[in-house]
Image (cartoon, rainbow over all chains, first blue to last red; front, top):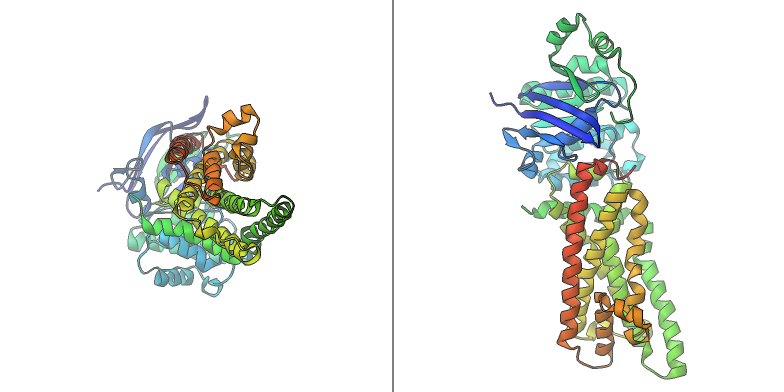
Length: 248
Length: 262
């Protein structure tokens, strides 16, 4: 089976400082990959390279067997992205924001689709509300709704559950898992909510100072580190790590 | 490949913003109105004393200059709107190409320039008995040249913001004004000191505004004049497209695109 996402020997440096150092991994249909590591490990940089927003120093990213650099537009039509650190225009209503992105992703029958994602993320009653009137949690849900608008095959999420209350966090996590199982959606997500991540991810990438410490299935890594939950694994793997810069 | 829907998305994003923003409507309608009234009455006063046809020259110049400013800001401020909204990453993480994005902003800038010039044109007829729109095809030609020049300045502004970060946003308002003294908007090039006259030769807008004065004097604008204006604009456009593309590429290499709004 052809991997959905392939990352080959990715390096990223700013001057002499390496932010990513020889990162390679593959992701298959329906996989949910959790990327964990301390602040400054290079998690967000990796996600931005996967979106083509940051150019790697060397290495290659492929989606569906095709290079991102050459087929960026075609590929990104099948990729969704949501981040807790990126906002949406506050002066537009929820519906207007979604309409803009429906056009950007050339979504067919977008009015129906907008209603669907608003229902899914429990924002139907906020359709006409200005985004500045939304709470942090509602804004994050809108961001997720926007990322699902074009029914992507791959979803990249940076801290997707930050700002959500526990009830919504659980619902959103269950929704991701269901999408992966039923529709074959592949997800790559960074999160510091380790207990939530443990419930949905089937694969893990441990990254520290730009280098991969470990990559594999959840159970496989638990065995490797001799632990039985993700929190223990995190502390065991990163116990000697120092705090890095602000890059997640 | 260029996508009409993606271009429309960029235009739509700015139209929705305009729909909800009183301050942006004020910027679009209030300043051109005040400019027109102020300079219209000043020139009317001078005309009453001197007896020349200065009102038409001033009003024509003012409308054309406003077209340039609105078009340039449509592009530069359009980009800044996404920086301010911290929405830039969503835009560039989508299938949108750089060309789609620029074309969307160009459409928006045309719309802004059209609204401001129509308003000023209407007020010119109503208050000063001056119809800007009946000055013939040459004036349309000059207006088009101004639009092209405005876009080249707008692209350079965006390139500066991408390179230097949000600190450089002041250029969205200041960069076009740098060309104002040499553009001979309200006076002929001949009144400039010799050094400024030499500089004006390399500023395409100086030919445009000299041409405008010829139109208002009922003279024909020499083809060589238009040729020089368009040739210079072509050079500016090529340079600005190169600088903009390079700056965008560099911002991806240096990771600045992800930090431009911080």
